[in-house]
Image 1 (cartoon, rainbow over the protein chains, first blue to last red):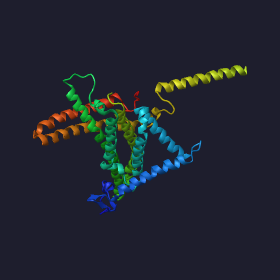
Image 2 (cartoon, rainbow over the protein chains, first blue to last red):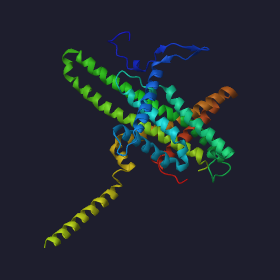
Image 3 (cartoon, each protein chain N blue to C red):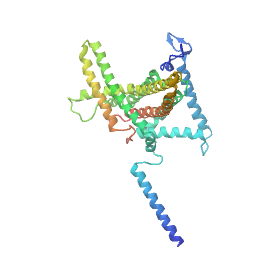
Image 4 (cartoon, rainbow over the protein chains, first blue to last red):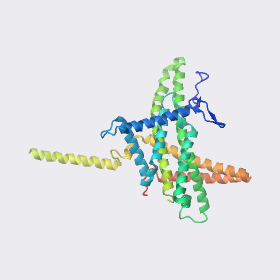
Length: 252
Length: 112
């Protein structure tokens, strides 16, 4: 925030310490990212608790929103990992709601987008993959490793295919986190740059005539970003289900 | 006279209803199925699918390269393992993309 003239599209992702806190040499400060995570969790809790408190037969607005989200995630889990996958429903639901709220709240001006931080998205992806590995190993033991051994392959090809499967498995958390992070980062930078064009053109004398063009683009992009925000939350949730399905039924 | 008219109207209505539902079936649309949601955001869905293919492919290549690079550092075989694992990573990337192509949205139900 040194100069107002220089428009810096990256500045919105800067993390500021609100309450500095150093524990055992680790910087555990309460930052604006932490603040927005708290806001997200409070928002989700409010939606679900207030939405389900009345339990009327004919749902009101809040209740139908809560019920729709529940039904949507439940059907997604059931479709992609079967009825057995429903034991992971709370996990998938929490992840879906967190990502959805983070993406949508981030679209409001002057807010901070938590999911545009690779640490956050990679943390979520690592949580998903470690759940898959731990649950798979605990439930199926060594049989879980059959996930890496394709069936019906000659002995000579097998080592190479296992290697490829292992690399493919390791790439999962990376692609999962990078996809969400890159979508959010790119979308917000694009919005900022388009907005900066409007401001710049308005201040450039006669060129102010064409300022409505980037302004219209900003509106279109905002709508598009809203779509991307919801879609990426959905994609994250559905891929979580697909990966969990591997842990529930290995050896496909 | 009036009754016959009613009957013919009923029949006409039924015919129209049948035609409509067969048209809906032909499009694979159901009023409140998941398909209807997909149709509404088709550009967004297609873009997210494309981005998914891109990241899955790139991530596998990067992971392969990183494994090869690290093994090179440990085993002092400088460029050899990097090249080999880059090839494996690329293969894994194609394998990822193939898996997406086989199961277009990743949401296809699998029987338990």
